[in-house]
Length: 346
Figure (cartoon, rainbow, N blue to C red):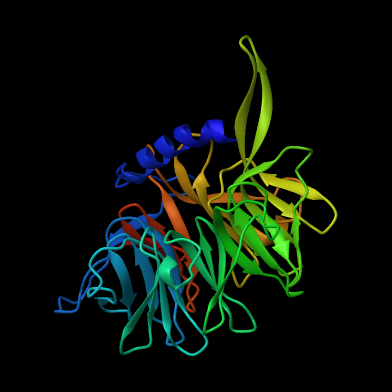
């Protein structure tokens, strides 16, 4: 596993800093329009990498970008983190009390109670200052997926979970609570779940380890979906080597089903039951926003539509289904909205 770290880091650096302005539509052509935004003093358009998008209780769109966390009210953008000068942000969450949490790439977590900010870092007990995602469980605990384990905050203090407690890998990418109350963790290796007492590392796929699981969801039927890759042995003239195999997998509690060979960075199930993903269509290939049709979702070969794609190495990131049914997606250069017919470039 360690032999791939330098190569993977270089690949990410290349992806992160490659422009994604050129579009390549697959399937039927989709009209692309530019959003008309009110020119007000509080308007800042999100630029840079948009890793996650959420919606608050009032219906505003919350956008976590490397240039700040923005709120879009349907007319204008407001930079919620303009007073925080240094961090690049990876995720945003509105908790059940209406407070906001901001996860940063290298500066820990910021908490905003609508009046003041509070900063949490390793000095306050956070496992790492690199925080990929934030999740609130049904008990009201706030979880952070960090580069050195999973951190749980109960409103007073942190408790950290690492490989010493049973986590499969300390580099955590995503957290999800299923309908039975188990917490699932995506990591740079196998995913695992926590039942409140012990961790269970997910069984390897055909004896091969998962690698870099960025997204986990539970669908309406209780199946667990994984987006990521596995390491495979490949025989060649120079001997056996390990290679990555991209994919989207579904687990029904007993068996795996590989749904697609497409790379999967983020997974979303919409209100109609369709599964949406972003990811590279193949190793080192272009990135696409794809939709797997609900009617064929559990067939051997489900129907998949590439809604739009990016030429070259442009990257598509987080996905949100807004309350009006529109799909929002982040990229390296900002955010886009798809209303079923038109893609709006913000």
